Image: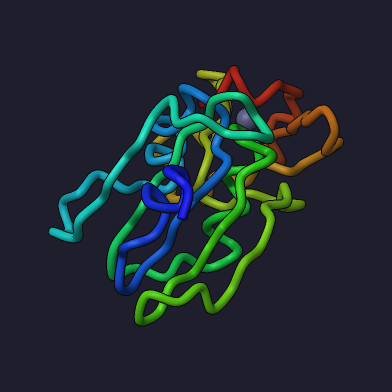
Amino acid sequence: MSKEQLVVRKIKDGTVLDHVEQGKALKVLEILNIDGKDGNVVTVAMNVSSEKLGKKDIIKIENRFLKPEETNRIALIAPRATVNIIRNYQVVEKRKVEIPDTFVNVLKCPNPTCISNSNEPIAHIIDTVRKNPPLLKCRYCCRLFLPNELI
Ligand SMILES: [Zn+2]
């Protein structure tokens, strides 16, 4: 077993995010709203050697099985990330991430005067105009922006 496998394996149940671009792990946790407050063990490994990426980050979230609509947000930050769902130490599902067509209540419009940033009880809705490279648009004020303006 290689060193890399040792880092990735070993959780009983949960989600492993592998092939996260080097240095992006904390941003990925942020966009997933994972802050450790639910008490589950979250392990972050940064700068792990990878044949594919040179260096990469790995995130292991125990006892949570992230759904595609959650993990697809990661594609804005780490488009090459792979999602491994682990049950009883086995990878039962492996998938890639893909930028969704719409983000609802995930990202906030960067326009301070946008109605979605007022006190109105409306959802934050951001549409994907282009996926590669990503270009996003607020559904309310129609402002266009790049992911790094939001995250
Ligand atoms: Zn807006």
